[in-house]
Length: 165
Image (cartoon, rainbow, N blue to C red; front, side):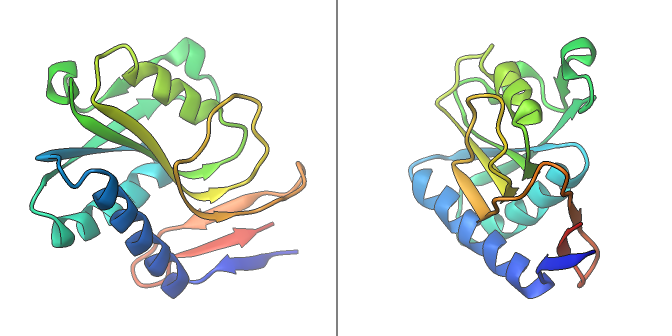
């Protein structure tokens, strides 16, 4: 059985709210790094960046975070930005769904190897099934789901949606 959890309009509203929360937490910053985990996280990060560019004069820099989500320990984590480009900056690490926390914790670990001004996390859907001590600072929606259920996020032009399967 498939249930639609969020519609395109609801997702747009959540993106705007998260963008404003990020702006408010970084109002003094001249640059904000939005680091999207490749896949749905990067698509979500691009949408947040687009809204941020409209509401702040700060430079918004999009960073792609690359990792093998199934095996991040062995694959390692890399970014489209060089370390010196985000050192002493404010970073928001973005993913579409926070499930076990594995992807976010390895992403956070990668950025913590560098001195930062601030590191926050943002997700569209927080599933509350964490096995690591990582939390989403900014979240679109929190769902208490069973372990056998699956969240599917679709980012499509004018028809974004989140489904519970």
